[in-house]
Length: 415
Image (cartoon, rainbow, N blue to C red; front, side, top):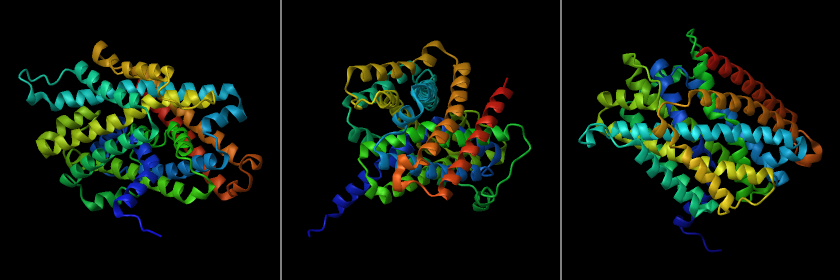
């Protein structure tokens, strides 16, 4: 038997973990950057423990949703309609798609604001690049990628974005890394008395454990064509994606903890991070960090274009053909949402709050429905999980309920 060359082996390995990188690209967006940076600036590495906990829970849920699709051959959203009715499936669909559309507006706004702030020294007026032009450029780029339209192409693009993002954030972390003991202390569960501490934890967990992530996982496993014999590969892929989610979020937190936290400088959004970090870390470091933010934004914006067409195809049991006119029009509408903030100004705060509440409600529902499905012998057959695994999923469900309630109360407190 002829042994494969090293380049071929590497190519096959990267192809096997592409679904995991897709999840990392979707999961680590500007929301994760903002939450991790804000937490690191305000509390140092104290809150690395909920980040680790949420990534462990995400690993378990990724396995659960992936295994269900491997065994049944059906995606989660299609199964929700099949077993719980069209009403429940539509509720989940509307909750996740609406929140993703609003998130698209926010992510595009953050990316263009960050680039505008970074580019101020490069423009004669000192105002930086125009946000509307930047939005059109970035929106046109990701829509072009969508137009090319094959699943393998989507995976390759996401792997490029994630690689750039990962290298940027990790490189910046090593330039401003905090004391190792601070990281170790952060693994010990503690909760400060400040009123917004619980909200920050809920936000961190929410950006890591969003229910839409597991619906996407189900689709990716089906697209990959994994079967029961591929359980080992599916679990390895889940481990890799969860590990990188933790590593990149921890790196962003460390960037803020190593520079802003010792000086008591607060961060409310990504643009604050750019403004405050540059005088402390230098232009080179901040340029690398900005490259990471842009890659994080594009790596999450691109899946946003795919989600509505994917989920609509799932719920109607139709092929996921991204070259269909309907899907291209949906993607074009999604891209146009990126112009809302640059054109009309301000931030769609109320709509974003509504979307966050919907997403917070949807995540426990999605986890609970999967817990019920995988507990059914007539659905999973001999591959029905053992009682211990189901109890673990049940505990995670209660955890998501607690975090959802905490997040809703925290959001309400903002008023």
